[in-house]
Length: 113
Image (cartoon, rainbow, N blue to C red):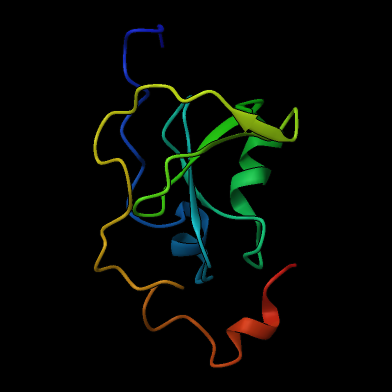
């Protein structure tokens, strides 16, 4: 990835690991290095930060509609934005938390704070 080239397209519209293993998420993050979509640190499985630790891909963008921020997991601080290949966010009509049908009724109690 060069400074002019956009980061890769997202891996999908939901957390890759949650979809593969039957989990659920609160909010989504998108790796700017490879496009991996993972769940946020408030989500039960925290797949986005796990992806950053496992791969060394430190910077992720919010994948939530309208959120423009980028986060550097290694530095634990906001990061400068980089161009991203579309789509910029998950579909606005997609359930949050999600995926629809997998979220337990007591999901608020299960969030990490």
